[in-house]
Amino acid sequence: MAGRNAYGPLEATLADSAGLSFRELRPRLTPRYALAWFQIGCGHLALWSIVIAAAQARSAGMQLVAAVLGAIGVGYAMAYVQLFFHEAAHYLLAKDRSTNDLLANLAIGLWIGQDIRKYRPIHFAHHRDIGTADDTERTYFEALTPLFIFESLTGIRVIKVLLLRRRALDKGIAPGSTKAAAAGSRWPLLVGLAAHGVLGLYLLWLGAYGALAAWVLGIGTVYPFLTSLRQLLEHRALAAAGGAPVPYAEAHRMFGDGPFASTFGGAGFNRHLLHHMEPQISCTRLAEVEQFLMRTSKAAWLDEHRTSYVRAFRALIVRAQR
Image (cartoon, rainbow, N blue to C red):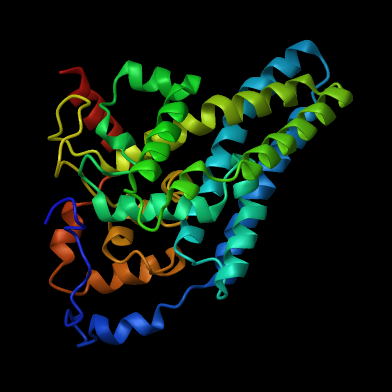
């Protein structure tokens, strides 16, 4: 049924051309934790390299260039790193669940002021209620209009998302949530703000105004814009009209393996269709699931869901202007 994971799970008896069934393949698809952390490390390396490079600018002109280009780089790199918070929500960053949560909070959640334990019920509700008015992650309900872009760049959409999540917790939509959870601890947010504040003050002390502007604009505008846009491109159905919640109007897409798709849609988001079919399979093994499906009767069906982020953007923004 649409709105209740209509795309999966995969049938255990589904077999490829060599006779291998998904029931036989599934136990082999254990998470590759080292690979996931290597990818997270690469994201952090890119992020901090951009900040350090921007801090080298000295003249006013170069600082302006550093602010603009640095903001794009910082926002893009942060968006990539934050995608792995999603892996942590499914306990796929470490074998031990407590270790998974601790590492996720330290390496990822710190910079967005979130605790993975607070985010997990919200995300699980998204899987359960996708395509319905109860979906807790429903940026894709909005049409890709100039207003959507403006709200995403100015932080308005961030506020809307936070209010939506709070209402979901208050109403008990998120599984396992309580009134106490809805109130939540403010410590993750406070610690995150402190981390940003310390970095900002350090850059200010260095006189690295270009790097400071790059960080503020990258985190405050570019990062939330890319996050909102990515989810819309992954899930908004072409048939959905306007911006109102439309039950059963979600879509799931496959975006390929190019450099852009693999970073803008990192952590397996470039194969988001497969994630919604089998959410407990690590992003480090989704390529193998795709290869398996391409050797089965589902190959043509899978090809029908292939696109690119650019093609999806063009299709959705044209639809929004009609």
